[in-house]
Amino acid sequence: MKVKISPEQRFLRKSLKTLDELLSRKYGCLLFDVLSALRGPDSDNNDVKKAATGLIRGKAFPRVLSKSDDNDLGLVVTHEDNEDLVNVRRDLENNREESRHFLNHAHLAFKHLGLSWYTVNIPTNQHKKVKK
Image (cartoon, rainbow, N blue to C red; front, side, top):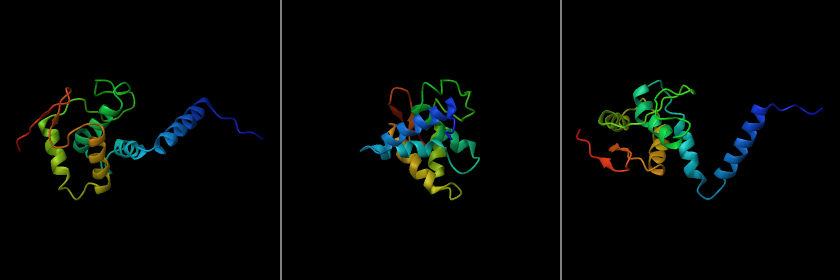
């Protein structure tokens, strides 16, 4: 007996097959770092989610996660960086409560997406220095 597959399951299987193909390529590890960082830290710290995960999500999926911070997926998304968020990222490195595993993926995702961890990211890809 053949199991009937719903359109949603078909879409998901096709999408996962595409991701599997992309991850198996030469630079697949870059995609893996970004995908891993999209989940965010293992805490409910919304400051960290806005400062790191939110920027990664906004940069990785600009069409889906529009310029509004409200989105249909219920995700934290950050479209404009600022000095407060830079300071949250800096403090994150000294915070033992947050996962080092997440921090490693987040750092790499920032690098792969052309984001700066230590300076304010502005849309023109220039970075404004932040005084602490």
